[in-house]
Amino acid sequence: MTELEGVIKFQLDFSQRTVLTTADVLEINSWRTIMLQLGMLGQTPTRYDNYGFGNISQRFGSDNQFIISGTQTGGIANMAANDYALVTACQPQQNQIAASGATQPSSEAMTHGQLYQLSNNINFVIHAHCPQIWQLASKLGLPQTRADVLYGTVAMADEVARLFAETNVLQQGIFTMAGHEDGVVAFGCNAEQAGQRLIACYAVALGLDMGSD
Image (cartoon, rainbow, N blue to C red; front, side, top):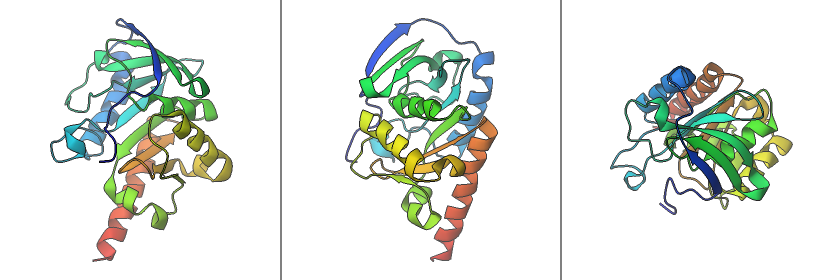
């Protein structure tokens, strides 16, 4: 690993208090469970130095607010509302995030926030870790962020904006982070679209991998 997982790199204005209910996180929690079962999110001693990996978010209300899984919650099998944070403001160029909840937001909250700001049609984001997709990104025709850009930074937010300007990533709904081992980001107008885009790409990647044997 060239960098530690789960390190928050932005300036965080955080208010620790209960803000989310079970009903608020019902859909996002269901899809997080699917990602956990697929091994695209979680925590295991055999991957990434046993740091939690992957995160998931959902637009909440207006003004680009969103619910996101808390930092280093990958090892939690069954998440509760208090394991999510509510990001109330995201300012990528100022490297600032404001959030509230019982736990701090994921270290990838900046990237999620940038996506919600780039398109009002994006309502769900999954940051998965999938080596099969990541390693075959070029063959799959996926947009990729530059290899020298690290996750959770202003530079990554800028890279995502560049992909939106220079590629058809908005139509594809998925891209990889070349500088973040196994990092894949899928998004959509709802949870089902984001999840299906990721799973469909995974299926194609597995087919390519099997075909090379």
